[in-house]
Image (cartoon, rainbow, N blue to C red; front, side):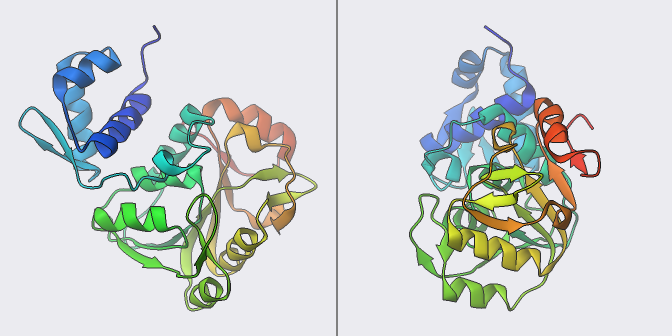
Length: 256
């Protein structure tokens, strides 16, 4: 059995804690194939970042079953890639920022790893993201709107009106497709409209792209490639995304 990377262990621990409320060192160590001391270190790291709180003999959750990864039908797609992308992108955030987080399973991982001690304000149309972050003490502005997509996204006139009231330091979104000719694209028109509106109202645009989205063109265009400041992908997605977007695009990976 392949030994898990620390980022993979952290993701599995978060999933276990969210689904079971509490876990113990021994069962985690046995499940993940590491020592109890390694699990203790992992839990300490996650507690320091505000994702959970430890108890005697294990860890208890500050949130229960609100994580988009556990709800979304695409949750198991590109799991390792999304974990790398989400954790690395979360590390880029700076104290006091006002950020917009779009909907989807990749941004859900980003939300999971977002520290709660940076005095951030998060604007999001995702009920799942809003619930997760608010339960961890992050200031959240939920856009409101009609909820009708698989990932509990709020959209429509109400959401658009709310977005028009704000400016963000950064917009962090996923995408259903990214290509040189098609740009960023989505399969849902209303999600596309919301993302486009926030791209126009921020200082910096970061797009989280797992390798499966490179070269895909969905129905509705969000923006041109040139409107994106940085693409964040997994270590193994760099070559694929670079081949698709060319040398002009700024592509970031956990390994640099």
